[in-house]
Length: 79
Length: 79
Image 1 (cartoon, chains in turn yellow, red):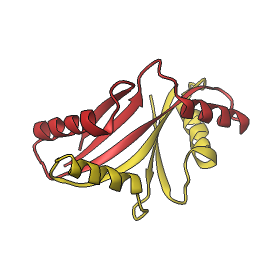
Image 2: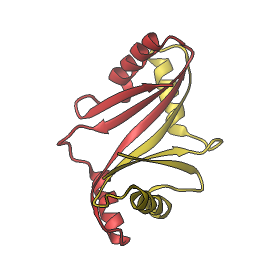
Image 3: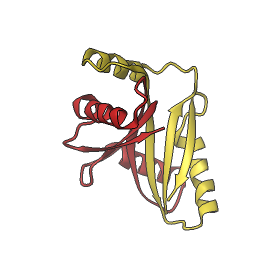
Image 4: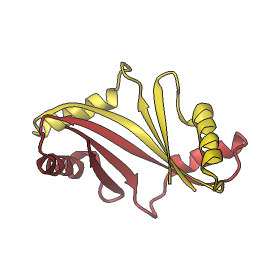
């Protein structure tokens, strides 16, 4: 089973990468961009085939390693 | 309109971040992880409201700035 974890910065947390993208797009002549934010996607291949157990396992991985829950939110999608 | 761009490494391209995640999960005692890959998500807020035009615009941004098309694939989702 494959899990996809989307990790994004919480609202209000400064996102320098997003700001850099915004400015670079403007410098390249792209108009009409009001904001940009950058996050991470982590794809994990699991042996576990039970969706409930897989989700629990990935949730624990997020809390222990993948996401910094002080400043980041995460969403888990299972395929 | 908001566009979300998923950028992932092409198959066969070495992914050291993914490998590091894989090893770290193993070291933390998580079993049954066969592979991990890391990619990026970029969320862009656009003034453009027409989906076709917005997609064209974001596609050009990807080719010119956001993705390295030699080693990366990108997928554009519009909300």
